[in-house]
Structures are given as structure tokens and as C-alpha cells.
Length: 497
Image (cartoon, rainbow, N blue to C red; front, side):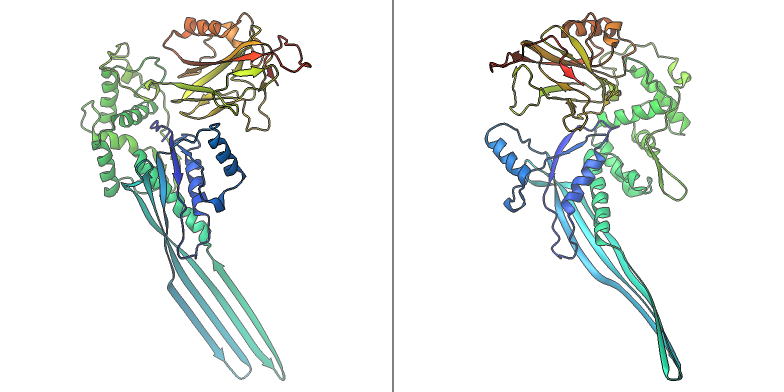
């Protein structure tokens, strides 16, 4: 989903009941865990956690209700929700038992063996939250078999007037909790894969050329989501060396068709230079690799060096707007930067108060953020020694500072009366080595020769041009303390490490 640039979607879930009362597990929490784990890198799904059942509400929910009533937080409406239940629990579907024994005047033996099988079925669906309707085709119904068994050996004998007896037993049982978790993870992979239109079956180590999956791919292709098709195919061509990933400009239509034609020729397909179903299916087929035993050993395309033969002919052609083939790095980008203190929209602070901010970028980018205080000092917050790598995924929430971490590395504290602000820059690649000397100073220290955020923008324009980055700025006003014992404002840096 990350490679297909799936945007972040808000999702929630109903309770997942078990009307048989034979599987006492927290199925809804397993759904949440599965969604969070699969969104760790792609940030494809954000779960909206809100409980309306009074019996299930806790401290967090009570605080949420208070802040909602005071308009201090906003509860966003999810787009999707998960519905379903443990459909059935069939016990003793298979019950095998074997007993045998011998008997003599002074010696007896006995042997027993039994095995029982239980089948658990789980059905989940995705619904449109706005209309509370189930989306056709976005359903999952799977079963899992769990078994219990045991073996026993009995020996008994008599020596004159004395008797002895010896028993040996071995029992095993497969838990229903682990079985339900397997069903939940399978269902969420299937549901989200169908919704995002990505070949989810590859992650389940299923045969990729199965007719059912081929029909599913064909349906997705015919629905005309050309943006996802081109993003995945272009990334496949880059990883295989048919296209260069180092070009600052997107390839022209001629360059793209040349690379695509060579890929088609190398794979024994009809050379058309256009994106057709066979090319789409072949490009996705090797995204997941399995070993001889059918086990998952790799996902993602293997990267190779660029093939100069695929690039030399038309590498210097500049595309027109109609010729531009948009890929992963050419999608429009925006930055959502805001202050996250308790009162939303707050722009007034007193000297000595801490400021908390957050931001998201609409697509995967490299991030750099600069903080300016009222005394004319500017310092770089990101990257820093605590967060040296500033590459973030699309719609991944970044906290400045990270108030969820026990050691965020710094705090943002207002230092003097006036205007302070934060400027964040997003680029397609790491440009730290290309920036001029003033911007390459140590992080969390005042930068020499830079007095305000427009100076930072000017240096970026000089190096990258106005089209080489995306920026966002937020400012706030700082006033002196109202208390008589207020500490005089100083020109100290606005961060503490």
C-alpha cells in the first residue's frame, strides 16, 4: 500500500460478537492490532477510537466527552468501518477414538487414543460510514480448524498378593484465541487489499497465477485506476534498471515507452510500449518472492543499477504537460502544519510556555524544519542527533517535539516577547549536502548568518529553485509574563536539550 501511495483513511470498527459464547476473545482489539501493524510504514489506516457504550467507557473516553462538549478537540468522521462476527463454532466435527487392551491372570494392558476437531468461522465486512451501507465485494469469510487429542497407556499386574499399576498419558489442545487471531489477520489483509486494489494474495503466499486472482486483477485494471497502475509499474521499471531514479525531472512519454518496451521484450510479451493488462500483471507478479516450499522470503522489487541502454536514446527529452507520466515522486504534495496545544487554534503564548506542533506530508518526502525566535535566532529542529533520518511516509504524523517519547531530545519553549515561528521544508530526496553552508550548521544550535525564516527560504530558492521543495510555516505571538515575578526575556535559543 505504501508503494501504491494509498492515502491515509480513517477507519473504525463495531464490536465483533461471538453468539456461540465458545470463543471468549477480544476480536475487536485483534482487528485494531492488525490494522495498526499493516499501516506502520504506509500509514494507510488511522483507527478512530470512540466508545458509545457507557459500560465500556473509561477515563480517556470521559475526558474525550468533556473536551468535545467544550469544542477543544475535533473528532473526525471515519470513512470506513469493520462489521462482522464469529459466524459459527462447530465442535466435535470429527471425533475419532481408539481403545485396545489385553487381560491375563496376572497382567493387564490398555491403550487409548482420541482426536476431536472444531471449526471456527469468521465473517467480516467493510462498510461506508457515511451511508452505513456494506460495500459490495468487500467481504471476507474464512474458517480455521483446531484439534484436540490425547493418548494413554495403562499397565496393571499382580505378583502373588501384591498389585501394581502404571499410567502414561499425553494430551494436546490448540487454543481458540490463536486461531481467531489468524482469521482476523487473514480477513483484514483480504478486506484492505480489496479496498486498496493491491494484490493482497501475494502476501498470503497463495498461487499468484490462480484464475480467481487473475480475474480480480483484471477487474481492477478495467476499473481504470490508472494512477495506481502507473505508480506501481514505474517503480517496477526503476527497480529493474529500465528507468533511472536519479533524474530530477519525470521521464517524458518517449522515455517511459522506451523503458516499457524493453521490459516487455525481455519478458516475452508483445512490444507495445503502452500499459496493458499483461504488462500490469507481469510487473506485479514478482513483487513477492516465495521459496521452493511456498514460504514468503521477500516482498518488494529487488533494486538494480539503471540500464544505460534503456535511457540513452531519449533521456534529454523534456516532457510537455500532456506527455508527463506521473509516478511516485511526481504526485502533488502538501504539508499540514499546526499547533497542538490543548486549545485548538491557539496563537498567543507567554514567555516560558512550551509549544507543541505536529505536521503531516501528503506523500513520502525528506523533511527539514527550522525554528525562529523573537530575538533573531534560527535553528534547525529536523534532522537532529535524536532523529538523524528525516524521511517520512505519506500522512505520517510527526510531533515537534515528540511528546509521546520519554526522551524527545528537546523542547520548544518561548524565550522572549515578539513573533516566533516554524518553517518546514519537504523534498523528494535528501538535499542536505546540496544546501549552502549556513544551513548545514549543527542542529539545535543558532545558525550563523540567518536571522529569520525568509532567509531560510531564500537559501532554498538559491539552491533548489522555487519548484524543488514544498514549504509550510506557522507563527505565534509571545507576550511577557503577567505575574510580577516574571523572569526577564532573554535572547537564549528557543530549545532546551
